[in-house]
View: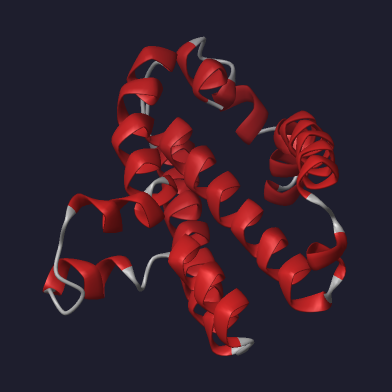
Length: 161
């Protein structure tokens, strides 16, 4: 999306008869396929049995959609591919490395750890440890927020000159 935006071809795509969903599916199909292929190989290496249950599969799909929508939104927000990379790095660090932030020595009861525990990946870990369905609801809320961010950026792209 960022490349389309940078080369000024996104405008033609947006005003074409294709719907919003058609554009999203068409632009993210290759990313989705590569993610599924790499995920299957990773799961085969790690041992796939724990991931064959319903909750982990739902969690993986919701997480994939969250990161996909977040990436598309940032790609639409940025004006160039380089700017997209610059914006994406802190966002992906914030959302992708939250389980590792607990190793920085924060007290378990600190406000930082309470905030980190609400992020999507710690919610997946919590779901795995407790067996609860509640973390999937929290991830769904994150997914809805990412979808709204993406949609707002898409609408902005549609109306900007």
